[in-house]
Image (cartoon, rainbow, N blue to C red; front, side):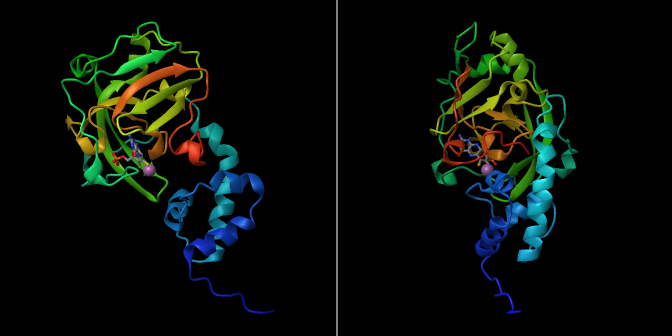
Length: 255
Ligand SMILES: Nc1nc2c(c(=O)[nH]1)N[C@H]1C(S)=C(S)[C@@H](COP(=O)(O)O)O[C@H]1N2
Ligand SMILES: [Mo]
């Protein structure tokens, strides 16, 4: 038997292992940025060669048969952590560099609310801050292959949706951001007890890089589903897609 060519390029290793997977498993994991690091994180094991990658992918593919239903149980809670485990400094990520973070004016800010809601009044920051607040320490997982633990505070999103008289039987909640980012989530996730309309990070007003003045924080979703600098929220039955979702990322994006 001819000896297999040694693989040196991580992308080649990943691509060749992918080709041996069945189509549904491949489709699920062929997000554009699945790197070896990301794969190691998703599979919970080190992947250094093509054998390791295949094992990891096989494990993920088996896991995924159960995962979608398991992750999407609206009553299931994501793990929480003690403050001592917060990652410092917490990483910044966006589709641009930190020098281009949008600077939203606090005074002029009004959160627009639209679609299938009874009350379309736009909210000032003072009004949002006057709603009941809570905080939680959870893990943020980015498909680019890193995760970090952070502390977000704000209004339980279900409280907000009820306050604006949202149609809770609608399928989707969509988000538009100050940097042209957009995304959308399913209603069960919107109503999940850990889904927060986040106004603070680590006890301070949400810093610009983490999404000032407001981000939606969902520990049950991958990083790219957590929109920063949210300017408008809309409730709809028409699939809204999203910035990464429209480029082939999985819409559900659970973590
Ligand atoms: N408005 C906006 N929200 C966004 C993004 C973005 O580019 N713009 N990037 C997403 C991605 S991929 C990640 S990992 C997280 C990063 O959040 P952080 O900077 O608080 O770590 O924000 C998400 N939300
Ligand atoms: Mo991300």
